[in-house]
Image (cartoon, rainbow, N blue to C red):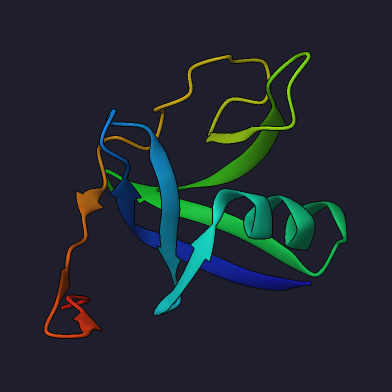
Length: 95
């Protein structure tokens, strides 16, 4: 299983995280869930020097996913501490 570090997030107009930057690749939350549950990738974040596993969770009674570092949490914006990435001039700012 490949380990991928999430280093940035993209939010929609309501502030919800809709994409993440993992190993310089922009992925939707659904793509992260498919890779995680398909046992192809493990996703982690570096929070204050400590790597934490990221868990995709499905919202009850909906076909929507969110990411959290606590598998028992329902906090949809648990990755809000990560830098928000913006698309500029057709490329993503990933420095």
